[in-house]
Length: 285
Ligand code: HEC
Ligand code: HEC
Image 1: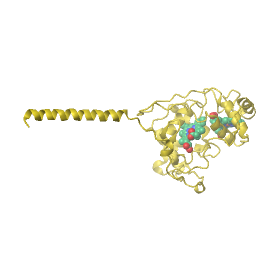
Image 2 (image 1 turned 180 degrees about the vertical axis):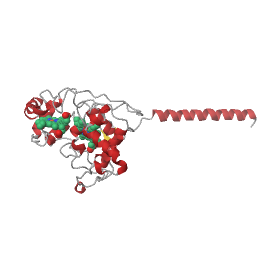
Image 3 (image 1 turned 30 degrees about the vertical axis):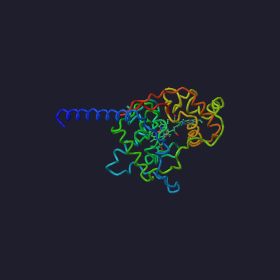
């Protein structure tokens, strides 16, 4: 083979190689990303039997010394968000409005064990989310505020606290005190009937116009991106916890009043683009 033929052969090799690379790149970029059904991904871990679970959250004051400052900050933020995280409240609520006693009370939505059950699939995100994302969701959707950054003292405090009160709960335990998705009733919610239930059982505290203490609708209330902005969830919550320490509504009354409250105006949730996110922000609830 003379020199010229060698050159031709080399040039041909180069052309073939770049063609190959282009074909590969073409298929790589155009191949559709296969969506894996969430049920196939989560959860593959076996939940611990409920009977083993004791409800005895440790006190924040008893956290180990090196954690105590962060744990106490998280505890204070949850109990009085406006005082301890004033930049992250956009309405008249605190985390403790829905999670009494720092989320350790069974008389409201308990946060005991929550830290042991993340990461978890989130229907509103369409992806698996971790505890920090869930906490950011609660700031944005329930307090109508811009959430604290992941590396901020506020967020680190809330995470430290949530982990501390879950320290005795096995990972991915199914929590018997978790709020069920819906009431066991086939009743069709009737907002007109709910208006009467509201006047009789709720308005004394929450106000005729929903702007009482705490507010249920209007600008001081949770947003339309909250998980409470859903008739089933609101009915379960109301049936279980409202009025406080005197929850006596029937499932039917709870569904009716939930339909009435849910139909009232409330702040619109505007999803923020999270830093580093390569896809569109989550929509809706
Ligand atoms: C208006 C009521 C409301 C407020 C205010 C609120 N939350 Fe929640 N939160 C809920 C409801 C309802 C749930 C249960 C449904 C769900 O997972 O979204 C929940 C769930 C959670 C969970 C997950 C619990 C679990 O077992 O998965 C965490 C963590 C949480 N909230 C933290 C917070 C923090 C921190 C704040 C304050 C920044 C806050 N919440 C404010 C209503 C509220
Ligand atoms: C005696 C006063 C009282 C009555 C009556 C009452 N609530 Fe509440 N409600 C509260 C208080 C106080 C809170 C804050 C959490 C707590 O203390 O349990 C609250 C919290 C709530 C919340 C979550 C926080 C928020 O502001 O969004 C909802 C939703 C709610 N109540 C719905 C109802 C409904 C529906 C009724 C009627 C069936 C009702 N409540 C009756 C006092 C009352």
